[in-house]
Image (cartoon, rainbow, N blue to C red; front, side):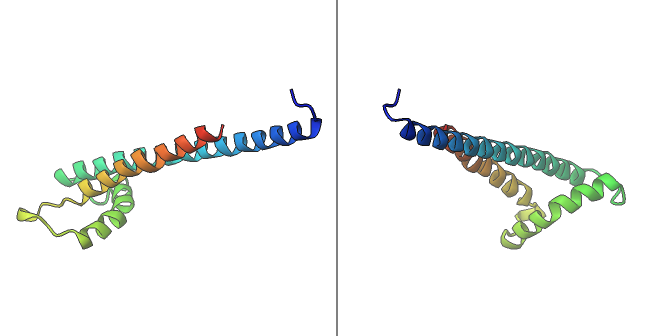
Amino acid sequence: MCELAQPCLVREERSREMFILANFIIATAQVLDFLLWAYQWILIARVVISWIDADPYNPIVRFIYNLTEPVLERVRERLPLIAGGFDLSPLVVWLAIWFIKRFLVQSLYDLAYALR
């Protein structure tokens, strides 16, 4: 126990603030992890749709294209087509998502647990 009541109260208040901040960082990491996980599956759906003859006017196909095309277009601008017109942009985006999940999301979790 503390000899003086005041220093103990200050430490307990800081501890409580850090606990709240840690919970907020964990929640942020979980939301980011879920969004990246969902985008990976949408990206996989986009690749599968490109292999089959899907109706471009189907609302689901349009939704998937509208979510993935802005990101894929930026990658295609910087990445040349491979022989035979093979598009590697979905692979590059998938690897970037994997890196973000392994680096940023895991770093947020580690930071939050260090604050507790």
